[in-house]
Image (cartoon, rainbow, N blue to C red; front, side, top):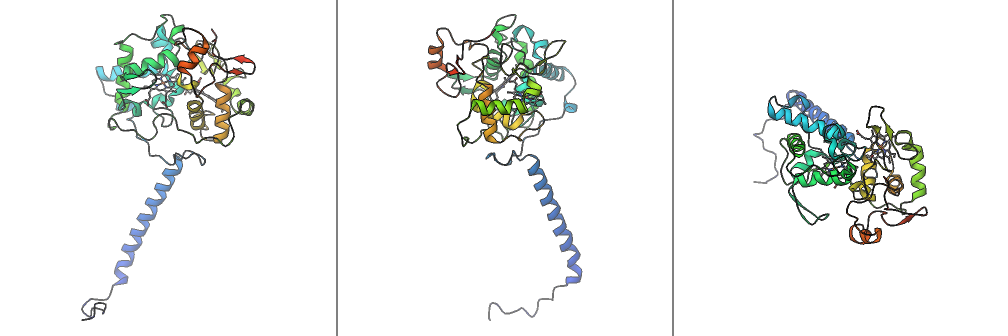
Amino acid sequence: MRLNAPDPQKPPIDWWRITPVLLIQAGLILTLAVFVIIGMQQIEPGEDNKAGPQLAFAPPLESDIPDGPQGEAILRGKAIFLDPARYAGAHVGSGLTCNNCHLDGGRLAGAAPMWAAWGMYPAWRKKNDRINTMEDRIMGCFVYSMNAQASPSGKPPPAGSDIYRDLETYFAWLATGAPIGQELPGRGYPELPEPDLTPDYLRGKTVFEAQCAVCHGVEGQGQARPGGGYTYPPLWGPHSFNWGAGMSKIANAAGFIKANMPFGSGNSLTNQQAWDVATFVVSHERPRDPRQTGSIEEARAKFHKSGDFYGQVIQGDVLGDGVE
Ligand code: HEC
Ligand code: HEC
């Protein structure tokens, strides 16, 4: 018997009967494809960003916050996150909120979201060469980003403080259902590819004046609210993050700015513009690095070997001596 011979027993295909079924199937596949493409475009992080499309974890909705003591702790944590000056004021020495750098209540992928952080601690940190619990990590943001040294107490919340417990309850809840110990897409700030041209202060200044000053002020001072706090947070000067903060590293600032600024138009700058304007922003004086005990030169050698402008002469000024 020849293998390829048509089988005389096989009935002819009844196209009349199966055509509608095939059409419906094709229709379903097409609809699905369209949804997938639309979905991918919405979270596509910009064409010259090599991160590519990312499917972000979805934290629970506000309406899912449980009743009772746990729900109350979640809400207290969220309140501290949005307005630390009000709910943790003894330890806040800057004009910033957690939410200023971890946008949308710590929910936004690409803005160092808390649901992505939660499952990654305890973790070894090179910054202090030891294992860091989540509490240690939050304390770090109090010390550097919130400049706790200039706060009424002069210190971050002490270990074991309810401030940490409430924040952690909020983060754990945001991470409901997220895998533990797994790097989730959208964690941290996107890592931008190296720019074609060396990032430049003056090109950055041009971007800043055209795209940032309208909210953050021509002096980067932000816009203070009459009742306290800021409508638009300060980018440098006495009320901004200090020289030890992660945001003072050019790469962190560039990634944050590319993904999230100008506010409401994230991913509209080119990578080059993001590097340039980040360079401009972190080339200005800000509160001193609390780790600096001796000279700027010593602190530079110890804590600022690369990645920022601490201890360098920019526009005729040695950066790092701090402003109060
Ligand atoms: C000036 C900006 C800024 C402010 C204000 C700020 N942070 Fe951060 N935070 C950062 C940066 C930068 C990182 C490091 C992000 C990275 O590694 O990509 C970070 C990291 C973190 C992480 C670890 C994230 C991870 O994925 O490992 C936690 C937790 C955190 N911050 C909590 C807070 C809390 C709580 C507050 C308020 C008390 C706060 N931050 C205020 C800039 C800020
Ligand atoms: C429409 C107003 C607006 C514009 C324009 C804008 N920002 Fe922002 N920026 C904000 C707001 C609001 C926040 C805080 C976000 C929050 O709390 O939800 C912020 C936060 C920041 C932060 C982190 C917090 C801090 O104080 O350091 C940086 C850095 C930043 N912006 C840089 C820039 C740069 C660079 C540009 C120009 C490319 C820019 N922004 C344009 C409104 C704006």
